[in-house]
Length: 132
Image (cartoon, rainbow, N blue to C red; front, side, top):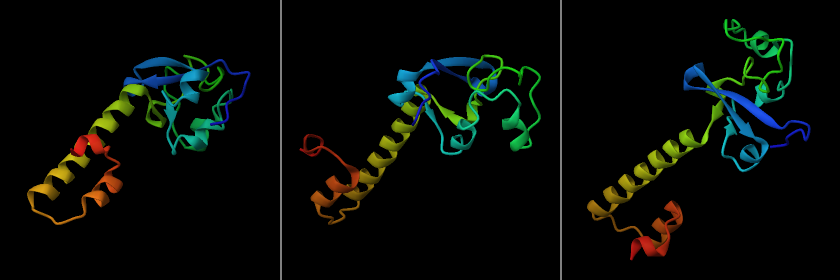
């Protein structure tokens, strides 16, 4: 992600828009807070003071939003929650993926599937220590 060096922090909604959080540029650079693929279009509007995000996507401006404040840089005009994955959401996703992969492995082993173990290691990126 290319981040404007003049930006010191990124303000985004959490809890379905009920709260705001502030991410440092370091957190963005290290993917502790990530803008989703869908949010990448809106990311070009960070700093905008015209309400273009709401206009472009035909969204009514919520009562608590002040579009005269810089978009994604002010608690009065934060980046929308549905376009951001914060660290806690990323952990949930990683746990679900891990659980899903474990269930697949368990099903393969329980069904006496004769797959090559090396192929399983490659597919699921497991370390040899987990298998032994």
